[in-house]
Image (spheres, rainbow, N blue to C red):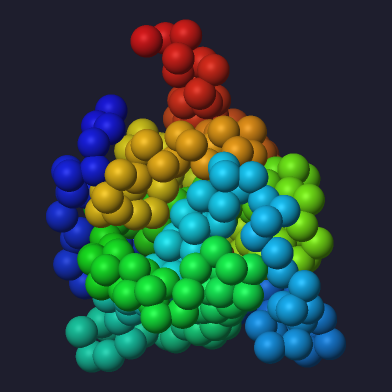
Length: 299
Ligand SMILES: [Fe+2]
Ligand SMILES: [Fe+2]
């Protein structure tokens, strides 16, 4: 596995993500479930949800401060993530009518998702400034230096992009929960609680798409899902300076390992498939073997 931050991800395929795509009605059902999971009364905003005046970085350890700075970078890269969905699920005449209709349904999710992730970025920015971890102008410039770097994924298939997001959302949710459990600063605890609940809903949506894809298309989507785990890299791993050193440090601060998210992918696969095939069995074995303890024993 490559471990230095200077190497870039493989080139991104151009244009529409490859099928087999879900029928638009399936996407619409998944989007409806997602939107119902955050009715107006349960939504939150940066301006009113937290007691910013009480935020206090003096109550954080050095590792916890570093973790907050790190996750702010990850959340603040939202324009890159949103841009990828715009490129790979185009909403114009470059795609045929059926594909457009699929993409149009997905877009109902993508815009809400983007709004929530942008809110996460703003919440962490506000926390850093309010708690005295950073200062607005400096933080804006620091985030901008990383934020303008490209975000790409090498995957050809739509289901691969969904499986990638499934793992990434679950990994983020686990990280926020575990960091929250060790932090002794009420405002940050509250922020991490809000964020982890949103990430759990995002995970559920992508899990729904992957599960529906397996049910509809069976063995045809096994290989694209396997590819995601085979080459998995967290966002910004290829572009952010010092990513790996920093990632190890923050993992330590929250007793975290992103491969913990893989068991949730295995669960999705097992739930989706009634009649198991050799290819599905091979996929679940492979994903399990990619968990860190198994991987480190093998090397
Ligand atoms: Fe987020
Ligand atoms: Fe998310």
